[in-house]
Amino acid sequence: MTVLVLGDQLTRQVGPVAERDEPVVLIEATAFARKLPYYPHKLVAVFSAMRHYRDALRADGRTVYYHQVETFREGFEAHVADHPDDELVVVNPPSHGAADRLRTLAADCGCSLEVVENDLFLSTPTEFDEWAAERTGSGDSGDGLVLPRQETFYRWMRERTGYLMDGDEPVGGEWNYDDENRETPPADYDPPDPPAFEPDDITRDVLDWVENTFEGSYDEPPYGGDWAEPGPFRWPVTRESAERALETFLRDRLPAFGDYQDAMLADEWTLHHSLLSVPLNLGLLHPREVIEGAVEAYHERDLPINSVEGFVRQVLGWREFMRHAYRREMPELASANQLDAGEPLPEFFWTGETDMACLSDVLEGVRTRGYSHHIERLMVLSNFSTLLGVEPAALDRWFHAAYVDAFDWVTTPNVVGMGTFGTDAVSTKPYVSSANYLQRMSDHCGDCAFDPDATTGEGACPFNALYWDFLDRHEDRLRSNHRMGLVYSHLDRKSDDERAAIRERAATIRDRLREDERVRPEQGFDEFGVE
Figure 1 (cartoon, rainbow, N blue to C red):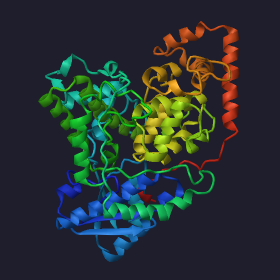
Figure 2: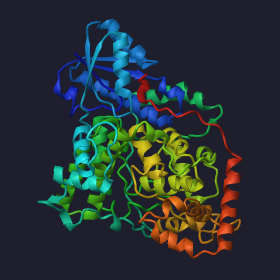
Figure 3: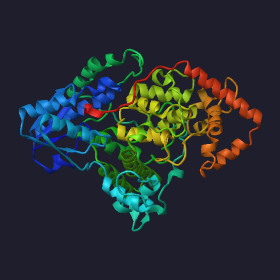
């Protein structure tokens, strides 16, 4: 028996590697990175973490078979050629269809493959489906399961884990302190420096290899050679560096995380955000130790409850819920488009060239770091795309290309579900706003070429006309939503002439952006070349 470990399962704390003292096989397949662009540091993080994981296992005396190949099939064939009677066991990958593709590959290559439960999450598919069926009265397996709301799921997870609970009641008396997570830092605010992990010899070799192997693949249209301009590589790629990343967050940035969770500053790309998505999504950290570290810090250091609860909600509530929403809604989720949005993604998402200060700053950070924090992803990038009417799948493709922490199971439900309201399976309303929100929660508007207080006219912020035009265009679909009543009451106060001017301004914005349209490849995200 040999344990097959995929590139997002690099754990020794749970699963077959922890439970069995048997050989391990890793397949470093590169074909997936040639089909679609991936941010170079995403490839570096995956391949470097895999190689470090290999070496750590070997240092502890484990036998590791490591295959560097073009396709996953070649890796299977190489392993079976050397071990013709071997039986493989693998943790169930979260990406849609990956387990079935692995089984088919194994069968084609003449070996058996056992797929076991994925212990890198805190709730199993069976547990979720049974609970959801009780909540909604729908079936507990197969089609027909209605997803309960994320907040309901989060409270259930709090109750069953005991995190931040005082008996049957939530610590502090409230389940959710989101309304206390909307402060903006003072002008002279100086947040803690984010951690950076100096690349070692392995990571430097991978950096050189990725640059020489893959960057040329994206030099031609539709991407162009400058869609990503990576700065220094800074991400943890070992268990030890991931533990240090968690430690520095809990010590330095968690205390004020709650207050400034939704704030955006042009000169502060991380503020108090954890930067733990990369090691979490690679399996270097387990969500249990991340949450328990925050809860322990709350009790030992008397940290603000809005900071700790806000962070726990992101990991225990939202991350877990996204996994199940993706699992239940795929493959339809990938092409969901309930608002019939059909605009192309603006070219400036790839080039960063726009006079809108908020978009320019966020995109520059993405181009140089492959990262922006969650509120920038939701209320700047996704907000603008939704208002413009960009096809959800087109924005989803860009997020997969642009972010170091992008994996299909988490990116697609966040972008298609919450970000663009392509489906109401994830959220009950679109997360859209005018420039008013951006002006309140960021410092971008002060130096912007556009007027955040103007709706029409050449110098008006595009967010404003697009926002009111979005509400106008989707009135039949959205007005009856009980969470949209207030904004539609504001739309009702606008005269016919105002609405006509708004439509004209929005149409002008769309026409100008369409002129920069470039063809994009078809959707298809297959982590680690499992084909």
